[in-house]
Image 1 (spheres, rainbow, N blue to C red):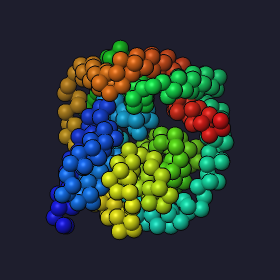
Image 2 (tube, helix red, strand yellow):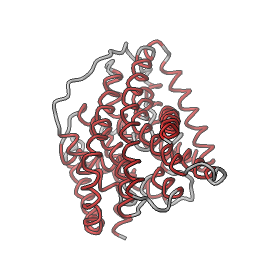
Image 3 (tube, one colour):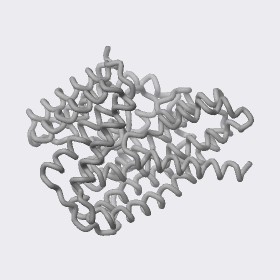
Length: 393
C-alpha cells in the first residue's frame, strides 16, 4: 500500500504542477474529473484518490505563483502577487519573488502540521463567533486600506467601483465567475499595459533574499483560519486581513501571500474533519470521495501535505530558475499577447461567451483603476463588498 500511496502522490504533484503553470486551469476542474471517474474504479481504494487530490492541491499553491510573477497572469488565489511580483521581475528579481512565495508556503506547511490538532479544538469553539464579526472586520479593514492610501478619494472610488462589478458578476448565472473577474482586473489589464508600454524584461538574477521577519507568518496565521471555514472568503481576503494586521513591506507581502495561500488550503482539510465544512474545491472533492473523514485519514492527509509541500518547494524553485534564465531572451510583448489569447480561450471554454464579456469589462475596469494611481489592492473590493453584503443581509 505504501508504494501505491507514493505513486499516487507523485501523480498528484505532476497534476498540481500542470494546473499551477497553466493559466486558467484550476485544481477544481481536475478535482471534479477525479471525483467523476472514481465511481468507475470501485476496485481502487478511495484513499488513493484522496492522496492525488491532496498532493495536487498543495503543489498548486506553490507553483501557481510562477505565471503570476513571470507572465502577470494570476490564478484566482494569487491575484495580489502580481502587484509586487511583477515589479520585482522588471528589476531582474523574478526568481527572488517566486522564492519569497515558496518560502512562505513551505513555512506554512510546517506551521500547519504543528497547530493542526489545536486548531481542530479552536475551530469548533469559535465558528459561530467568527461568523458574526467577519463583516465588521472586513469593513474595518476596508476603511484602513482606503484611509492609508495616498489617493484616498480615488481609492474609495476604485474600491466601490470594483465592488459593484463583483456584485454584478457574482450574481450572474456564470460558471467559475472568479476566472474572468479576477483575470480581467489583475491579469489581462496588467498584460495590456505591458504591451502598450513595451515592457522589456531585464536579465534575471538568481539570488536568495535575506528573510529576517516573522510578521508575514503571524499575519497569515491569524487571517487564514477565517477563510478556511467561512463562505466567500479566500486567500486574497486573508492576505489583506493579514497584511492590515502586521504591515508588511513589498517582499514580506510576497511571503505572506505564499503562506496564506497554502495555509488556507491546509486549513480547509482540517475544517472538513472538524466541522464538516468544505471551503475549497479540493476539500469538496475529498468529501465526495469519503463521507467520513476519520482521524486516520486526517493524519494521512497531513502527511501528504508535508511530503508534497517539500517536493513542491524544490520543484517550484527549479522551474523558476529555468524560466528566469530564458525570460529576458524572448519577446515579452509577444508572450503577453499569446497569454492574453490563451486567457480568452480558457474563459470562453469554461465560462462561455458571457464569461468572455465579463473578462473584457473587468480588463478595462482594471486598466482604469490602475491609471488612478490608487493602490491596486483596493480592487479587492470586487470580493470584499460581496462578502460583507453576504454576511450582513
